[in-house]
Length: 250
Image (cartoon, rainbow, N blue to C red; front, side, top):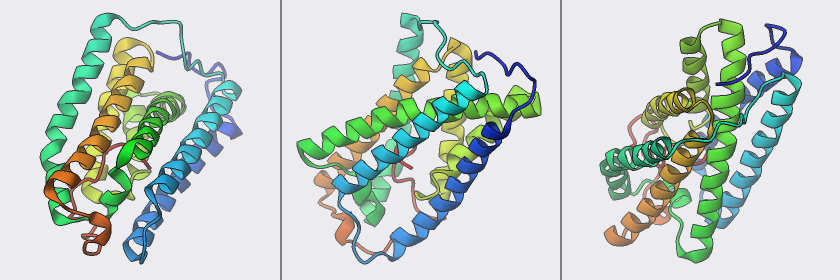
């Protein structure tokens, strides 16, 4: 899949990248608590814009780390029509499996859903942009750079996939504990796509398609059920609530 590190070990930049993503896990838990106590949530437009900036920053940093650590991220291996079809179909299957949980989350009026339910053309366009950036940036950072760094340290693809998936789930702690468990397994599936296809491209596509479906589904459910999460009760206990939108935004 990727060219291994020539030196057989990672340098300071690689350790810095791992440390930064671990810090983002800590920050995500803090964001969960902050959202639960905020008297008024930020506008979705502002939230989507800030998410784009964060994802873009992670993407740029991942590219710099890959260059410094001699990691080949985008090999000249074009996915076959079969691989593309499998990726898109997988996204739809995962979304179909999540829909009952999404519906229950909307019915409970979890106010976090306000941040994942784009309304109107402008917000939906921003959500598509966020989904695209999430697919490219997160697959590059976690299934690409972080996976190779852990592979170099642990010398085991299983350990590398598990550790990178664990940190990826932790970076979505703002959603819920149950959501983190689901996202962990999603990350393993996307890692499997990368290993199967020999590149990140199909995983990026599947990630993007899933996130678009998640946001648009929440938007539709909120309208159909007449629920307005931002005006609803306080956030349900994080360990009990259904996943808002896995694995869309951090």
